[in-house]
Length: 300
Ligand SMILES: Nc1ncnc2c1ncn2[C@@H]1O[C@H](COP(=O)(O)OP(=O)(O)OP(=O)(O)O)[C@@H](O)[C@H]1O
Ligand SMILES: [Mg+2]
Image 1 (cartoon, rainbow, N blue to C red):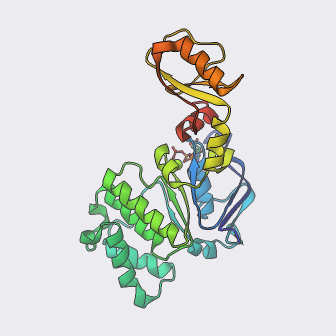
Image 2: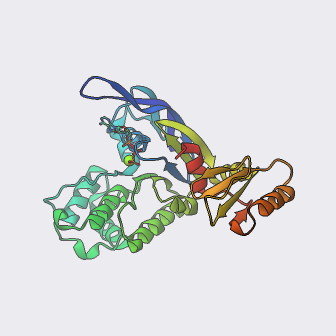
Image 3: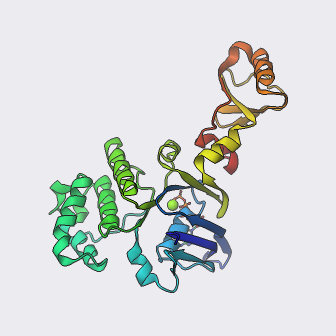
């Protein structure tokens, strides 16, 4: 049984003038157990809208979402218990202490009373938040609030954890803490789906990715396969002087340039080297970076 199955889901919002806007447009996606998935896309692509529908906070206009075989729209009280979602926006019970917030949530998510204190302690230690156990949530720094959000989402040990930009605006050491926690949860069998704008992060952590743009799924699959597909037939290079006259067939992708292999790799490499000569900063034909693929597919 798949942890998550998204079947042709569409979400339409109406603005105050009554105009309709498709934030998510016919997305279908299967998430397999035990893997780490990156959900990637530019600002406004529809990632958070999709995650909010998975979490049961928003209902799709069309299509359905299944979590471990249960329909989210029909059985949201059950499906909510099966997953842990860290939303992009910080939402919490500000007047309570860190421990109280977690105690309340562990009750809501069915953690046995006898286990609650010990689990809370362990999670706070994992996230380096133990010295804030008795601090009120409102007095935490932004990064600490984010840690508390992560703690809330994993306390009941869900088999699927979804994190919406867990590392946005957090410092380097916390970012590493979050990722080592994510990797450990994954090693223990938890399926992970997360969004990030740090593509190197996705490159390091994800086995598979799904790329969305303007609400549509434009690419999904194993990162390795996608990288191979994009680097198979092209040479990538960088120039010192970007004003140099381009060779026919060269296109610009971010800071790099790309040239489709027409003859064979050696011949085309030689052609580029002789055309650009000392202006070549780097040239390669190996795996395309995720950033390169992202820019190419989203036309940014
Ligand atoms: N409640 C809402 N009402 C109207 N429009 C909305 C609502 N929520 C989201 N949108 C719109 O839907 C689109 C997708 O937003 P969403 O938050 O899903 O993007 P995102 O991919 O998460 O972007 P980011 O990377 O910036 O977080 C945006 O154009 C946004 O303005
Ligand atoms: Mg978002």
